[in-house]
Amino acid sequence: MQIDWQRVTPVLVSIGIIILVAIVRTYSRALTVILATMPINIPLAMYIVSSGNPEDKEGFADLVGGLIIGLIPTFFFLFIAYFAARAGWGIWQILIAGYAGWAICLAIVLLVQRLISG
Image (tube, rainbow, N blue to C red):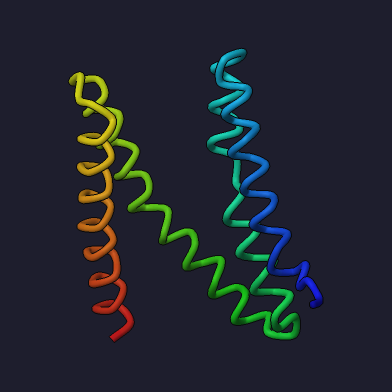
């Protein structure tokens, strides 16, 4: 059996970052925040897509543009999580509310995008 390292490497990097966050969280809040918010999945997705078809420069540019649009619902998730945490909600309530807000915002963003593109 041959290992497809192009597919395995992104998963291993993600696991490594999760483990690093779990270790560092007891030593430095600032470093934990940096590790948690550093762009990891975006470059991994970019690498996977670009290595699948390196000649498709226009398709790759479209992917990066889509990633920018995809960040809008993610920020809504974070705003909801922040205000819910400030209100004293528990982690499960925060996550449920955050993901609900994310899904609603994503639906709106996709609808607007579809209306604009015709």
